[in-house]
Length: 631
Image (cartoon, rainbow, N blue to C red):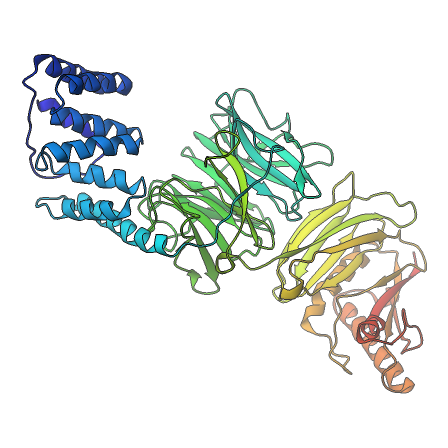
């Protein structure tokens, strides 16, 4: 009977005390039991189950066989069957083995019977001689039970809706991510144990039949999964395992949309990837911070969440998110919302309802991350929840589940996120850049700068075929949009989205005009206080763009023009407009722009672009612009 020690497969913490071992007087039952032990030693658990079932059929009071069978089922995560057999052990002999109480409690926790799980964990914790590891693990599970009992009493709103037959099939579909405009979704589908990416586009409120993402990315011999997409839909970060160019078992790769096809992916390399395991990337809205999961040295548990910032020479050395996020257990599936402040992830280390639960944390300036908060029941259950993503407004969440009533296996669902679990709402600007004369789409550089911080919210180029771009912006900030292309005048725009407008995107067209004498550019991001000609600090971004333009086009000469609305008398407005134009002129010359390339003039209220009937129209008339005088 010494072989009974094999039943725990190193799953349970060391107990530090003995067990009461019994055997069957039925010789045939005992023979099946010993054959089961041999099967366990060879890790052929199905055979062991068969032999133990036969042993119990010969002797239905064979307590050791029930214990053995319960532990195998628990090892295979078949907790309902494990429960049946643990209960039989306690029915026959409650004093048979102290670790039975741990086994039945863990099985109850993982089937949602939190009240009985708490009773049995406490019973196990009361036994003398527990190791420190046992005490820590049991205390963690007790905290899970206490949390779960209260969470079930206070359910959160949760009404999942299938994304439909265009996406879901009788195969497994999971890990959905959507673009900021919610027009495209990319997800993983497993077919014959091979994981590939599929994509679907939305037609009104219906997702169309999904197609394989790209032959450049999907392969027959390797798995592709655990992906994220940049809000504009142009960059795909994903996990590739066991590839010839890999640094470890699983690495993070990137592919770029090139107008009509995805590029061949390339390995991000060191320091993101290591000989260890890197996976589950999530990219910030500005494309400059990558969150991911790794088993590298320096972590706090088995799987930790790390981040790396993009520097001038590539990705910086990753930093562990630390004890505010990571525990001694596993944290996975990070999703950083485009607000760049709200992080969702899964964990079995923070108090939860069993297995892995979904959590939310928010970054506060200067204090790091808030304590993670469980999303609650029934978003979380005793099953594993992971792979959550949200739309830009934060109102809609996407996830995968194998819940009953689906198309088969895991399916993709969405649900309305409860208000108190939402990130900060984010809007977006979606535009198309084209040649003003020919109307043909242009590949142009797009920069969107937060005027308060000076940081880029977006810095990329338009789709080379369609001339389109999409970038997210957080309400409560002012943003400068600059569009430029060699041989063309640049274009500027200003956005100040507020919370009420958060769900209403900006849709714009950008007609770029070639550099010609008489060409005119309104400098929408040069700012003055009312009745003042002193430049505000937010103006430096636009002025820097103008300086770059003049340096890139050394033969060009411009006139800087100031304009006002019709509020006040003509003379005062003329003087104010000229002083503002002179201020811009002086700034440019102070930055080594030759005065021979510059002139300035104030036009007062004499050249309005619209009437002055509303404040918005008057604001349009209060402007600074420049005109090409010499090409």
